[in-house]
Length: 610
Ligand code: ADP
Ligand code: MG
Image 1 (cartoon, rainbow, N blue to C red):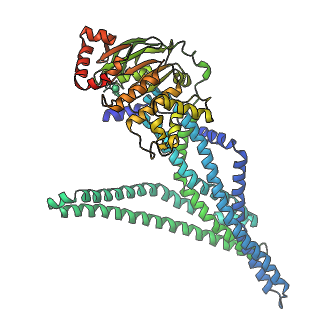
Image 2: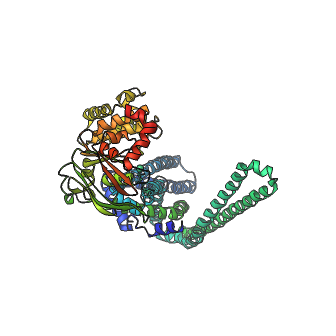
Image 3: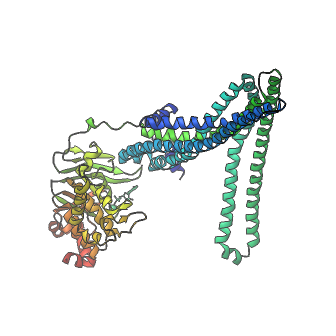
């Protein structure tokens, strides 16, 4: 496993974008909906601006009330001044609440939109990666990009980004408003910032690791508890309850200590923030009353300034504490953008399509990832329309040969030609047109059964035409009766969470996909079905119908498939050891004859009689 870890570290991973690259990728997505982006920003500015109304109105109220008390025998008209301010105060507070909610929703919707565009591009690039590249960079990295990284960015886009955007706008507008009241007040408000910044500088690098340790300790506690519960019988039988209780206690103690430490740390941090806040308020009040004395400001204006200042701390703390999360999201975004920005292979370079349906396998050697040789120089020619069966013991290299012919694997040496074109150099679309592999384990995608088959359809088929083609393909492989008997027919959901299909049914769907894709060359590496069973006979008929008229390489698990082939190729230990027509090989009395006698002597009789 040390070797595996070493290999892992040495693997060339998929590209990671720079900060500028990430931003460029996001800007491209934003540019697709410029109205949406501008509208979202405008809504954010409106929400932040409305949050300035309450401090202003309260300050104004102080001035109105003060003015009302000043002259002796105040007239009733003064009371009228209070009402509009109160109305503005209430409307402003309501408006700010509504606009803040709308703005958060708009930001997260815009974020989700950007992310969806980015994800689409990433998935598109990933799906176009040649299987050999996926092999080289490791499926793990590919999966991490489309799974984990998208998850991290999604969480950040829906939860963190809206708050960060709102906070940033509020901080900027509030500082501007404070300075608009009087520049000296703005200056006084800023004196506490060093204290606040110092508290954060102390807190941020410590809180992350401590939280991580706390989570680990909680995990260990649950683990110990779970272990004791699972082994409760054994614990009792061995009379070691006491030791176990001590163990769980010790781990619980550790988790509790860390929880206390986390709490203490946070308390220290918030005390420091409170001190910063108090310093700021004192500075503002001292400055403010000096300005009131000098007749520069009214008491109401000072009130407004203090309220604005207090409103600054929430967004500021939010901005600084979410720094870590924003950083993590940035790292994931860079990994996504790296893939999204990968250039697509230029279509112009694609070689000419295969000239005919012949297959040539020339001196192919192969091994997996530094392992022992699996194919050791295989030569094989399939004439257009010819049907060749490959037989041999398990591990002989049949599946490997099938994958190479279908272009799913890149040979370590030698080459595979489809109609004279190297299968590796065909672009994806041409390769799919030329050859289809029905592999041992069929993957059925979740969704309606008909959609699963339709995946293989050529792009020009759509709508009713596509539906008809899907039904025809299902009919060719004899699947229509059981498909129509499903609760919703072709619309029945299958795959994960859907109607469970038997392995035979899944194979039939894969064969229907083959029919719909209509390639010149078919490669079949079917799952071993019980020989002579009704399922096996049904599948054989389906496979024959699906491959009729195509150049076909079939890995024969049941020798009835070899019987119906034009030619049989026997593989052993990565090499072709015999080749010829069934009858000739049986007559020759070599390996194939031995295989045949063994097979037809046991379970084959019912199969071959059918
Ligand atoms: P067959 O289909 O004739 O049973 P395979 O082509 O599946 O033979 O396998 C040939 C050899 O290659 C076996 O020794 C098998 O263990 C090995 N092999 C097959 N697939 C892999 C893989 N993905 N990684 C490593 N070794 C593999
Ligand atoms: Mg196999």
